[in-house]
Figure: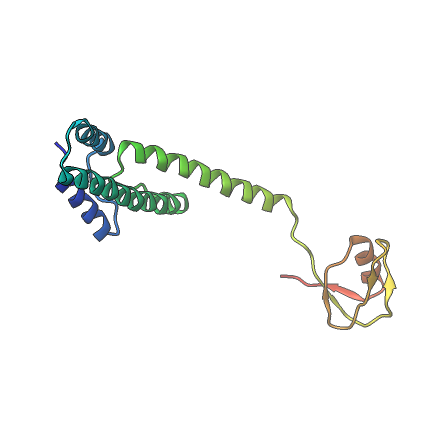
Length: 168
């Protein structure tokens, strides 16, 4: 049976450790039962009211601590594949959903990076007078500048020995 003292002890243990602490898998169900029992007391003393309020605050702090740790574990797992321990039933669901979102995000970013060709850069070998390109922009190319230009210009300027591709 869950008591205020046991809730406080679990919260204290969680706060004092960097790792997710072992708690009953149905801990949050037990907390709900505990709070329901306290709420059913018809005539509450000021001490009982204080205990209920303190229990709510303690559970909130515990929940905040564990949520943060679950998020950190999900991030680590999405990068390394390490599987965490000591998750409750509801935390396992939160963890799995977070992992799925992180993987989808990483996959979409990776896919986008694959779609976009890397931009090729060129070194200007010799200065030339300013000119207007086919895109109606004014180009000012000076010796040793590093530039990225439209393909039509690149072909012409390489042919005229003005540019050279920089190999990575």
